[in-house]
Length: 414
Image (cartoon, rainbow, N blue to C red):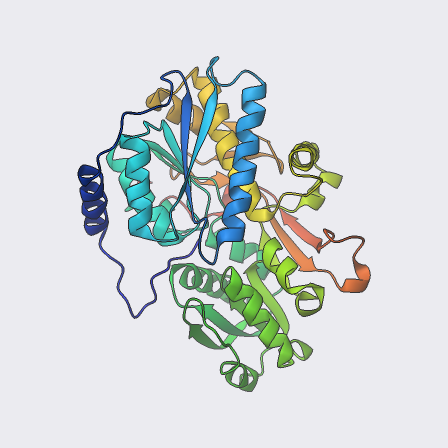
């Protein structure tokens, strides 16, 4: 979802990343592949170490559940499925190396994963160069644009454009004064762009923006400047621990007394980490919330299977991406009758699926998953009915191509 590279340090070129990863593979004395030839192998790079490790572990748990459920039903054309998890360390070069290893050494039939904009683009560069299907499960606008797209690239996650449009629709009003605290890397920049686009359409007004570095240890220096902007809405666009820490300090400074705190993505794990008091009343978007089980049968089935596998725990938002990304790919493989890449690509393009949250499908031009966007509000402590009762669902924007940028805007032929 984000890039580790701060704006002060330029990101390595795609060619540099690929050359470094290729050199690593050539130098390594890999042993022969041990997997059985009849196994369907899905590579799964994700940052198991680092500041997004909690979300990454949830992705792995849910991806493993998708594999188990498919295997319990006989696998893919009678072949068992194996998930090959690798730690990309939230680093584009590491991700490229691990992806090459998965393809060249482990003979992965497809790749799912990544939790960073820069990382997923590095993974995508490797997979598209080798004609391997990649299903990205992290927010990015760039991966859908024609310069990074390939026929092998599918984006199962929400993207910043659709996320910010949904959140702004239910929080911004004509005349609203919005101040922005934004992470200074791809995720923050794309979310800011989306909010400003929505803001203009809704008649809201930006009163200022402040960029902060990835992993800022202290946000207190930003608060007096934000307060001086006198906003009605304080929009905080960052991810992982940055979200928890910045919201907590904003509340400590009393920013929530005169301004509503809004985030593009309201993270389950960060809300758990900080507790209900700091997050009370914060509004943000989400791809998934376990409470959908009250109205969506597939959410109930997903939750029940997850509870059974994990001692009664419920799946998280970013965890759900691991499930829907892997499950949709395996459904397409079942429809294709195996792992033939051309047949699986065609099956994914035609796939209509509902495995956790209602109807989803991949748009033909850019392979973006069309799906609902939830708008959530964090509950006050007094309103909670249990430790997992975190959010109210304020609105659900249904799956629709109108939520996306047009194909021509992304650079595809009209």
